[in-house]
Image (cartoon, rainbow, N blue to C red; front, side, top):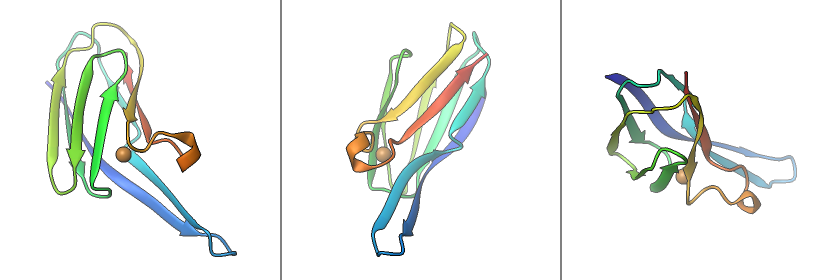
Length: 105
Ligand SMILES: [Cu+2]
């Protein structure tokens, strides 16, 4: 089992003119794994109330909530780069999309 630990984080900052800047992130944002072997992602919610997400192309769908750890398991069959997309924080007009990458080698 390839266990990978991830947290939800948030960068915040203010511009000189007082504009608030915010970006949610998966940390680490790039997760390398080997194909054909089971993967377990343990994702803990630190910043943000709720992050419903999908891993596109792998059929993985779950939600990470603040203060809880969400565990998902799957076995990637094909090498490639798969986007981990938060559905709440991925509209580009709201700022930087909350996207990470699972790299299957
Ligand atoms: Cu999110």
